[in-house]
Image (cartoon, rainbow, N blue to C red; front, side):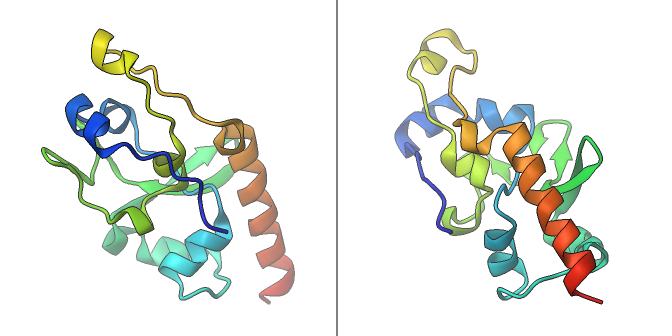
Length: 140
């Protein structure tokens, strides 16, 4: 499924990536992740773990459910550079693309951008929990 995109390059560039400095967004859609990093085929957690370092990703723990995300550094997302994100928008995490920019972020210097509910913690956790359970059943 194609992600909903709310990118505002001008606003984001002026903001300097406050959302990226906090912690990186995650891929909320396992099928999109599989398309981007596994040529569209189903994959097991072990396969992903073997490729994490080379992809500069990590698994974030969503209450016991592993969710892939860009590595975090002391300054935030590993892909954040002075000019913005070095990932092509086509491969950016779903949460990064879906975050709704807010001009108040520039005015206050605090993050006011909004994460749509379909990209929230509970939905992401459920999506990945279902994916991992399917892989245990179908990839034996």
